[in-house]
Length: 444
Image (cartoon, rainbow, N blue to C red; front, top):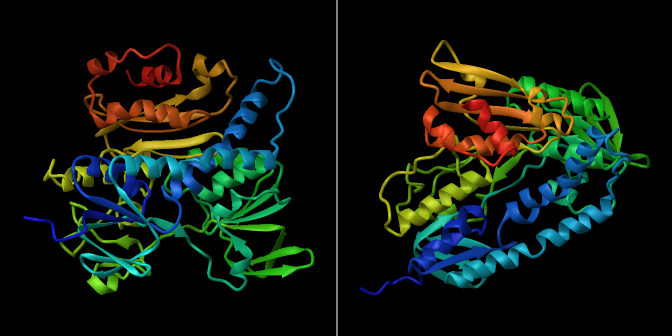
């Protein structure tokens, strides 16, 4: 029977929630389309992870040179304009590269913003496209603080495109984006003031580690104001005045609104088909299916307990490829999802958190990073890790703050995901003395 639709599967959005699965799905023989109104690849490659990591790379180099003073001579100064130009050169080819990969696999790319006309029809501009199944992968966008003068604040995308770094930067919020960009801006020479909405930063991470990182940031000149309820932003001859608290004021040259991210569910025509959503995103079942049988959702646009990160979106996208190509009929089974915050030092985690350990079900092992000879080679003086084991010595969780925390957690990930025994872990013969070997040695 001939397919009555233009496509078997149509994706709204082209980020990791879409392209990691859309390509393989098309290659499997399905007729697939991706609708994108902005840059192919979505947030992460273009104005999220990839861009941020490029900006952070010289910060890590600066920190290394700082630790090695006496062995090496001279400080590293970041040329902000050159760094932003370098970032542009790194990420500029990515949309074309991702798009080329999709089209080579047989995916049709439709440029424009899509809106549901009915459960099988998407309108893009003046054209309509039909599909048997539709996947909503529209991601998130920056939240904007709702106070007078909010238009004077900028989002993370604008920060990463600044040709000239402002001297005085005020950052609203204390989550991932705030702490990472505060680190980068401070390292590049800006005076940075972080206005926290609560009394704790990075609330999803182990707080003693967060406090240690904040202490280092404070030592470097970053100022933190907890419980700073911002009431207004005002343009004056001296700069932008941030009004907060009980008639307190802070004058800066530039404001970064890092108060969070919200799902892109508006203007999709979801009301036309009855797809259920709330302020946290689209509601789905264990098959990533919405309440409308042929409509699915993937990535950061979901309302889910899993972290809204690139690894999660990639996993969901690949799962939908397997499901929609008929290679599985099982519900999605999420693995342990790692996460990291790119401060200096980093904080990273995966699996069972140490603060969740109660009684004698688990054992928490503490490692002081500078005690490890490998970390003494570059004169690290701060850092700790906490490893959580079950009663059979299976690693079930890890959290670390150090200069290479993300690499350490990535190395430990297989032990957690595959529930490796002590004997199986000893069969992992890592190249010596890489960070992976150092991390693995701790758990064996």
